[in-house]
Image 1 (cartoon, one colour):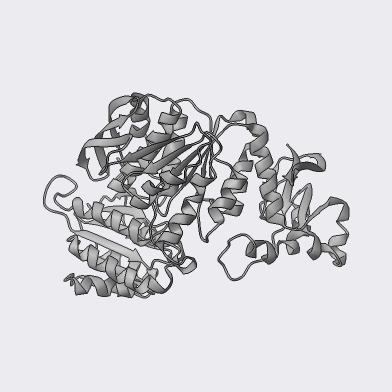
Image 2: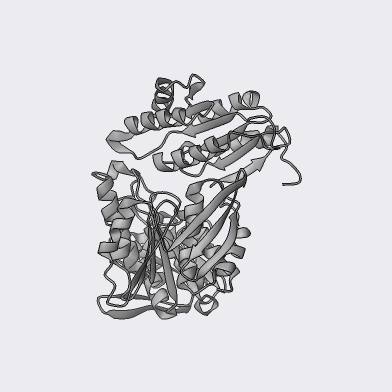
Length: 492
């Protein structure tokens, strides 16, 4: 593509060579790509919560060595730097490098002109995004989707620019399915300005990132910015089972011809699931109901929260006038996203749910409830299985973190879970709460490696084990250690 920026009502071409892609990592930049030299000043202006950042300008020479065709750099950082000045004819100087990246991404979307589906929520965004993209692709649409969970101000722009990277062209895609995250208030509004949605999906509101918000209501107000920034005539898709999300209907500025579509299980909704039954752990069968009719469906992801994610995907598909029978066929072939509810069967006779990518009180309790509901029978329909949860500390919960952990522990104990192990930091409160509620088999570990080592001798045939944790706790190490010690079923 030919790079340009769009802003203040004008478009300015700032480079006249064909680009093969875009990069923010000098180690992986490829020949013909445009490299963005990020600095602490850029990060601080764009909702990033870390306290220290590398200065990408130090890696400009390395980027050119790897074949970068040009570098977008911060003007005030380059001026006066003799080494960088030597690259002057290949430096594109701007006041804010992330702004420049976003302007390119916005311009690419605008020139493309296809439908944009944007999803947000306190939990389940990546799974819902992947399910939505899967259903649309399985029914014939060419889908651009967010890479992994790249849902912040950098990740969103880079995901959009996939349509112009590595030989791809915007004409290769019919629809973009984009995940939008929120670490601070105002972030969703900014993301929606970069990628204005035709369809906005609101999954849920829960106490996450409370370190950066005044209350759950403040979180809800931030999430609602996605609905508020819908294109004229756009569609809001809302979770009818979440009161804060359902209330966002009042914020839908629909330009006169937009609409709201709801999905849910507990409350009346436009897209819903009835006659839900668990065929086995991780496999649900249900009757899918949409405004276009009904169909029998099944989903191979554990938990009612994942069924809600599937209904959100079905609601998006309904906006594309896809018949319920086609949606049901697509859901039947859907699989869990990496580290987000993947069920692993081990030859030693126990099952593990790898949900180790992220955690917050809502997602932890949702998955724990799924485990508790599966307690009745073993994997082969035999004796009752022992339910076992290894849960890492939940991060960015602010001043309420200790009590949120303690209450989650109490609730897990009330569910009848047999064993709970907490890992690192505030997970000691999780264990304390479980013990308060009568769960004696609750234990705390300072590190993930300590918990993983102990688990290899503790796990036994018939166990159903959930591994859950915030990304920074690295509970995926538990999965790695188990896979190193035990063989997986060859027929899975």
